[in-house]
Image 1 (tube, protein in one colour):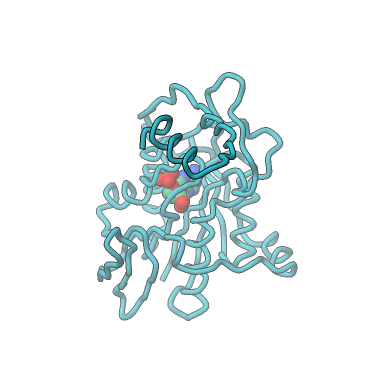
Image 2: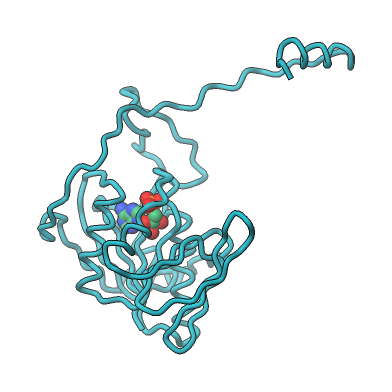
Length: 248
Ligand code: AMP
């Protein structure tokens, strides 16, 4: 059974980001980049399926700039077998990413595609759902437990009211939520081994997909600064401020 895991290169979650001077995007120049944390969870789940003897191959794919190779190598150091980079300098919308992933999966014919539930830069939470719809595959989003038995997948999903468990046939799409697992750290020997694993690179144009610009970013703004708090002397003063200034 083959598992395909799309991984996105994003600014490291621990880095404080700033909006560029044109207010058109986050300034990523010289920032530490990493695998999107939810994609890391997806890689971990795929690798665990392989270690449990339920998957035979884990393939990671990234659509992005040349340096996204770094994130594919990291995913391979975590246990993925090979990587595919679809190289482009364009920032694609989730629908275009889903179309590219469908084209890759039409070739790869994975039994299971595990994505992150969301990329932490765009906060889109769309790609897995769109990939499933475009490919006519069943989907289980926000997965917190994935079990594979006799060619069928049982997935527990995190929903508002608690959890929901569903069963689906393969091939299927799953999106990983935070509680699915705790990703491992890559060991030094595995980082070295990952350098020799196969990494195929292709240009986005080579896929000859009729991609459209589905959306346009009009402006990006930093959140407004919080005003400094003040200390009050008495409870009466606090109640007065709550009533007359905060209008509680
Ligand atoms: P999003 O819909 O942008 O929140 O992303 C959800 C998931 O789709 C991510 O966690 C990745 O698994 C996948 N994904 C999104 N963008 C890319 C990309 N450029 N390359 C590979 N996978 C991606």
